[in-house]
Image (cartoon, rainbow, N blue to C red):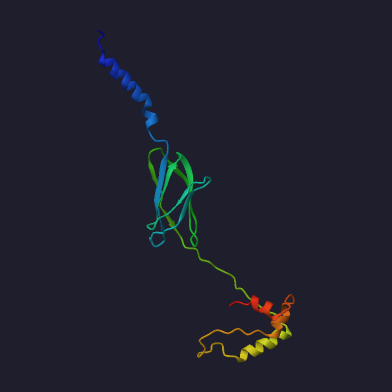
Length: 173
């Protein structure tokens, strides 16, 4: 009968666990945070992405986001939403098995638009129709239905039609 040496078994078991310890640890990290506006109110629906990758997420109703399984290293994070100025954070360090906290405060964009001028050029026939419509009241208070008036010029404008039935088939209702 052989005697079992428990010391040797414990030393071998310890060496195996020591060598395999690195493989049991995580290989990715996590980025989390909250996105707010200038007043400190949470912003839901903000897109938070890692630039240069296809990884991203969207904030919840409390403005909180999580980016899971992020490779360790330095990353650039971008938070953007329509109506707000996008923010970038460069050199965000992610470590294995740790959560990196990055909060964003987005500023509202001031949208300035130029004046838009619309000019209509009416022909002589259209001027006549415009003057006839100008005399009619814009809203008839006692009317409970809608009406549609078809003029001869409307029918003549559609030269492909040969009969009145073809024209009526084109009308709504």
